[in-house]
Image (cartoon, rainbow, N blue to C red; front, side, top):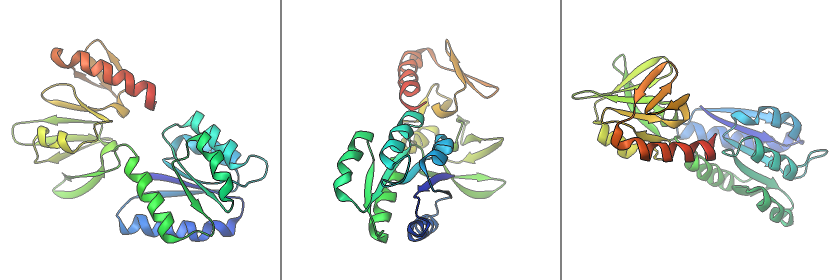
Length: 232
């Protein structure tokens, strides 16, 4: 589920923004949990779990720029969308690598464009169609822990449930977010977000051990090290 925060000390400002976000996610079948904060300190206590933050620049005590700097230190994968009346302050937001900007009063079009662009950049947010108990489900890729191929189908492990796809592992591999997934073996694709540890050719995901093939070992170790440095 997508985690989105709005941080603004003026409650009235969040009403239209909240409405636009909820309606956009509903119309695009995006599962979202929305969190509202009146100040940067409260947001920072929860920001590790956030995917997107709509952040007001002008706030008392800890303003948006300083809050943004701290967000980048805590959760560098979080997409920050700065909101302001004061266009001249947008230059400051470049120093915290804000992903997008929106101006007050909020417009539906500008909000939706910023939101859509941010969602597109979030790793593993695109959904795959799969089956569980003969029912169809569309689930974000990042929730997949690993994929195993059999003769004519694949199984995807998501939390404590096993889902099924009739596609081949090769076809699935083409659809997966390559920033997250790596084919470690002719039978297995793993999601690096869910790797608990790695030791000399063995990947540990929860209590499951999966082998890395000898010919893929060197390339996997390089990709996994880069992912570990950039995204954990």
